[in-house]
Image 1 (cartoon, rainbow, N blue to C red):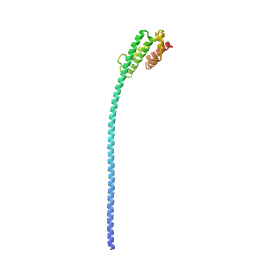
Image 2 (cartoon, one colour; image 1 turned 30 degrees about the vertical axis):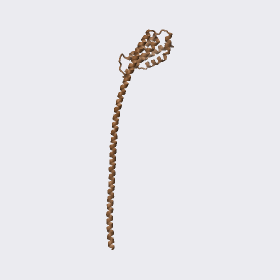
Image 3 (cartoon, helix red, strand yellow; image 1 turned 90 degrees about the horizontal axis):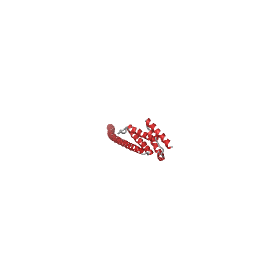
Image 4 (tube, one colour; image 1 turned 120 degrees about the horizontal axis):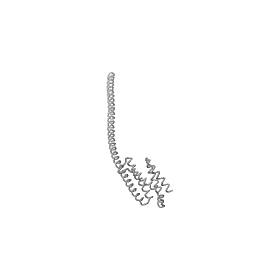
Length: 212
């Protein structure tokens, strides 16, 4: 009886050990599977993330290329628009300068010295603005050098002052317009050309002498 119980106990012990080993095996196998699954899952997630990031990078690169393309198109259009504006400004100043100059000569012949003087200054200023556009490469000169025309009209204005005849009516008009004329002379003197600077200074001195 005692032997039978001992044999049963041994048998149960072996069977328990067997199941214990089996349990450990499956536990280890399950742990390995879990670890492997985690690694696979992490790898898949990383791959998906990489692919997604790569897709985003490709999309960003595509958007950047399209943006740069549109910017270049807009810059080209803006450059062409600016060119047209500058060319129109050049033509406007040339046309104004010619009109001022022609009218100035007509008025000088009629003895309207103050009006003629003012128009010659206005013509000089208009031609100078066109000359600056040409110098800066913003417009092409379409006729005689506008800078020479600016100098020529300023000399005409100075000639009127040098030969000024005492006329109270003309003198009053000249005094009334002296402030605006002074501003125009300031603009004419803001150039790197020595002749224009000297002529503007001479004109200012003569003007101040007459209206004092």
